[in-house]
Image 1 (tube, helix red, strand yellow):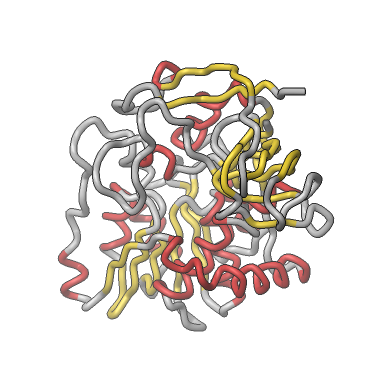
Image 2 (cartoon, rainbow, N blue to C red):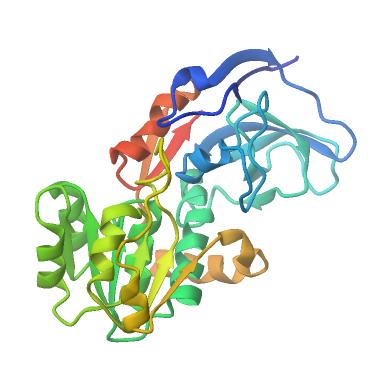
Length: 333
């Protein structure tokens, strides 16, 4: 029996915020796997700010999604047919499965996962690229030391919440910047952050002075824009600024706004460095083992915000840019 595959194709390059008409939505028969290929029924898809960048034409760390191509997305699913010796029906896998019901393609790039060890959405959050990003960006680029003050923007989001917990494990004072009382309370009460700043309800500079009286040693930036500019006024000598994302800028119709206070880097002999998780692929296994241990011991908690319905993809993706998600945003197919 041939399965029906609903899928979103990129129809045009978005200008500003993503709209439903930037995609075409169609139902076609799922392709059967060829030699060395597998057919995977997608169960959960990861929705990430990086998806907005993948829709743009131009040079980046990964080729853009081509017009007419299935929208790129990481996901987890179940193998339903296989012509590859390493995979059999019933296996669960993660990989770049696309915004669709079924993935048909080469098994290269897929990884087996065990649904008995953790809920499947967790393989898209703490045990997936989200966890890898938090782990390597903080530890390799931020290089936190015990006693450092670590400030995180987008702190209640998928990556930021895990970054803060790892920084606490490393003995740092952790301050999270988030929007809304509920998110700020979660960071303090549930995740053990030392301080929080609600950028929607208070003056950001005043909050930074209150929560970081001795300055900022590591800044983990997920948002860019005005928040990056404000934190640059508080950095310490030899501070490290990790540029993980800039979600405040992704939907700009004009040029990206760079930091006006960048001379603080010069004065403080500080370092600002960009981060792309794929650079650390060879060490994912090591990181996954350590994160799994922290999850098992309760030192790290993972929160997934699951929305049901493949057909809701364009609107659900926008939750990221409106700050409406709470934890890792996952689409249940």
